[in-house]
Length: 412
Image 1 (cartoon, rainbow, N blue to C red):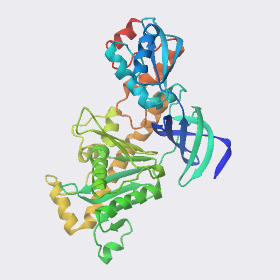
Image 2 (cartoon, rainbow, N blue to C red):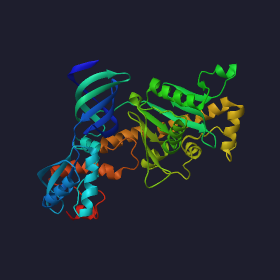
Image 3 (cartoon, rainbow, N blue to C red):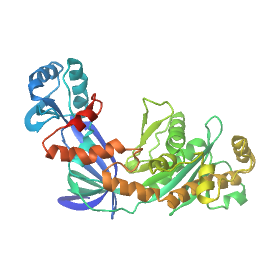
Image 4 (cartoon, rainbow, N blue to C red):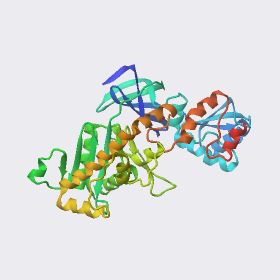
C-alpha cells in the first residue's frame, strides 16, 4: 500500500549500495528500524570530484572528446597548495569512474575521486549509523520501502537479530549440511533420508539433495530474517562455497532482503580473499572482527580460540583428520554430524557474546561511520570524520592514491 504523504522514521544503516538506473544514480540503504527492516532509495545524487580551476579548460575538453557529460562549478574551496578548485559533477557513477582514467594520463590531478557515492552521501550529512529520514512509504513483503528519501543524522542505537552460520561438506566441496543458530531458531539442514527416529528430531531439517539444501537455506532466511550473519571464515569459506554450489546447481541464491542475491567481489590483491554484500544483511566474520577489535591468538582456528576464550571446543575426536571423521559421520551417523555442525555455530555465537563483538561494531560505526563489517577501517574512519570538516574549512583532499598526500597534510 502506497502512502501519499511523506513518512518520517529513523533507524540504523545496515548496508549501502549505489548503482546507475537508466542513466541516473540510485543509492540504496537498508536500515534497521523499530518497525522492522526498511529499504531507502535516494535518486539523482551526482558523483563529484574536484579539479584545479587552472586545469578546468583542459579537463573539460578531454572529457567532452570522450563523450562524458559533466557539469562544472567554480568553488571557493582550495587544495592544500591553496589553488582554487572547481567541482566536476557527473550524472552517472559509470561516467564518474572514467574521469580519473581519462585525466590522470594527461597530468591533470583529480581530487577526491576515490570517495564512493554512498560514503559521500552519508558522511556529508554526518550520518554514522543512526539515520533519520523522510520518504514516500510503501509496505512490501517483509520490509518497508521508502522512495524520494531525504536523510540526516540521528542518535539511534539498534537492537539487531543475528544468526551464526556454518556449513559441512566433502573434501570436494559438496555440501552435506548447513547449521544455523539464532535466538529465534536453531537447526541443521541435512542432506539425507532419515530413519523414523531421526525424523522425530525437530532441530534437524532433512532434504533430499544439495539443491534442496540451498533452497531450504533461502527459505530459512525469508522466515527468520536476520540482520547479522556471523561465522568463522564465513565469507571466504562458507559463502564462497555456497555461491559456488548454487551456481553448480543452476540456482540464484537469494539470501538478501527483498529476495535479492548476494554480490561477490574477488580481491584484486589476494586470490584467497573475497568480499560479499548481502542486501539488508551484514556478514561479519569472527576472525576478521576479532582482529579489528585488536584480539590476538596463537592460532586462529575455531577450536583454539574457543578453548582460550570459552574453555570449550568442537565436537570431534580425530583432531588430526577432521575431514575423515566428517565423511564418516555423514555416511554412518548424520545426527552426530548435525550435532557437530550446530556446536560450531554455537561456539561462534558464544565467542561474539563473550567478546561483545557486535556491540563493538555498532559503537565503532556510531563513532566513525564505517560499516559494521568493515575490516580494519582506520583510513575510512579518518576520511569519514575529517573530510566533511575539511570542506567546511574551505579545502578539498587529494585522492587516496595521490603521491605524498600525507606529507601535504602535515605541511599544511
